Image (cartoon, rainbow, N blue to C red):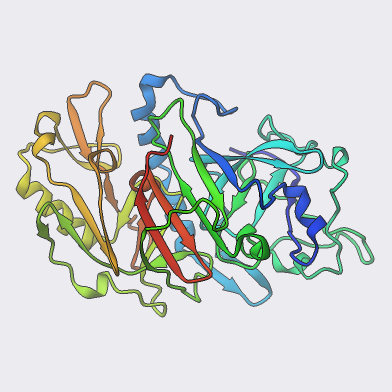
Length: 398
């Protein structure tokens, strides 16, 4: 969506409690609603409930743009926030978080994104933005970002309009019109800047796209997090410091662990290879050799014929679904067996079921695998950044 807008960058100065107040994230209010962009309670345009399958297919068609963008992220010498070479942040929105900004709090619905570091909110003078915008003049705790502060040089595109100007400015046309709540690993992310409040820990539970009347949750800090949860180490890639990498060790189709060459699974920062978890990609993507190995084994075990619907290349008669094998993702320290609702998508008529994985786009040169939100739904995903671990547990996100 093209629009001309002035977006407000929320730089949370952790040395000042008052500076945290504009974003309204307080220690006693760390459980925030998360809803699909097309949920009944979302203020944004909603499709008819019976068309949700086509909506998912349409949403997943935008995945290649996002994956390409993430594959080109690289740290810059002059900025703390990684930028993509020659690409702009795609305005792709799957889930929004309901937050209150300012004093008194102004309700906003901001896009949840674990692979971006910064938080943007559309201001009230924005053209082409969402119906919910932030009014700086109505907030007693609002303050502009001074040109002398380091944050003014840490984001690519921020600048002072003139020598001696009092406030840093930013004007771009590609930030999602709803605003962006970046939960990446960079120094300007909400999680890092609010570390003294929330100990660099957060989790979310994403509701199914079919949950037209339900919301999930975003929990900040240790309070309310599951006590007994299986974890896998979080790995850090200096070439893509914003992303949450994990060590994928294998994939099983039913009882069969498919043969995959180690180099397609291994985490290796130098050629920028590995697997990361992302809230903004819809369908889990694997490099071609892994994807083909999974699909070949699945086709062996399920009665065809197979057809292609949208991005999904392995669609079969839904009557065979009861015998279809489930996919298990093996990580260091835990295995995630994907339930049927995370593995298959049904057509509107219910006659076909599709295996919901896809290959990485051909124009992505990096050997990267993406664990996407369709496979994360109805799971509590815990990001314990302070202790470099990621936890996964089944949970009904309603």
